[in-house]
Amino acid sequence: MTVSSTEFAAAPRGSADHAAGLGTIARLQRDKPWWLLPVTVVVVLGSFIVYSAWTATVGHGDASIAGNPPYLSPFYSPTWLAGHVPVFPALLCLLVPIGFRGTCYYYRKAYHRSFLLDPPACSVAEPRHRAYHGETRFPLVLNNLHRFTMYLAVAYVFILGYDAVNAFSLGGHLYLGLGTAIMVVNVILIAAYTFSCHSLRHFVGGGMDCYSCVRFGKPRHRIWQAVTRLNVRHPMWAWVSMFSVWSVDVYIRILGAGWFTDPHHIF
Ligand code: FES
Image (cartoon, rainbow, N blue to C red):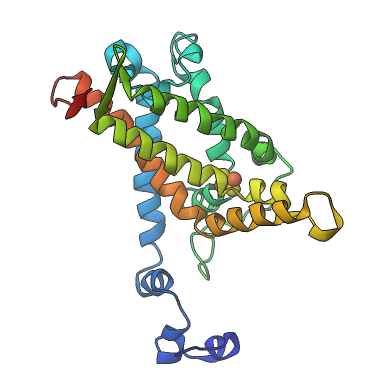
C-alpha cells in the first residue's frame, strides 16, 4: 500500500497508514525508545575513537603489528608519514581521515545528537538550550574544511588501494591470504564512503543548474547520478567503512601477536 505524504502526516502514530509510509529502518527507529540510537552511537563511535587513539599512540610500538608483511594497517598508511611525532606516531597518517570524518555531514548529525544531545532526537527537547551560531565560531567553524579534506580523502583511497595491491605480493611471489581479502574489502568500503560524500556530489555536478549548458555536461551528469546513488546510503557507508578500518587493524594485530595464522596461498 502506498501512502501519500499528506496521508502519512495526518495518520495517527501506530496506525496502518502511518506504518505503511515509513521504511523498515525508520519504522524500527520509531518503535524503539528515542534514547537507544544516541546511546548506541556513543558506545560504538566512542569505542572506535578510543581504539584509534590507542592504536595511533601506544599501539604503534610493535613494528610487526603496524605492518605484518605483506599487510599494512590503514592507521599507519602511508608509511612515509608514520613515526615522525614521538608520542603520536600515526598522527600525520591520520590527519586527513580525522579531518574528513570529523567534519562529515553525517558524523556531524551523529555527534550533535548523541554526544552533545543537541537535540538528542526528532521531537525531543535539548536538555539545555544554547544559542546556536551555526558553523561561524570555533570549533564548529572547522567543519567548513570538509570540502578541502575531501580532495585529500580521495587521494587516500588510492593510497589504501596501493597498500591492498601490495598485499598480493610477498618475496616476489603472488600471495593470496585472508588478510588480502580483508584489505581489498576495506578499500572498496572506504571508496564507497568517500565517493558518496555530499561535498563530492556537489563538486561533480550537484552545484550545477544546467548540464546541457556546460562542457562535458553529459558525462558529468552520469558521474553525478552515480555519486547520488551512493550518496543515498552515505550513513551506511560511514559505519561499514569505519568497521572495516577497525577490522583490518585488529586482524593485523592478531597476526602480529601470533594468535592466528593467516590462511594463505603463495604461487
Ligand atoms: Fe560525509 Fe563528506 S559528507 S564524507
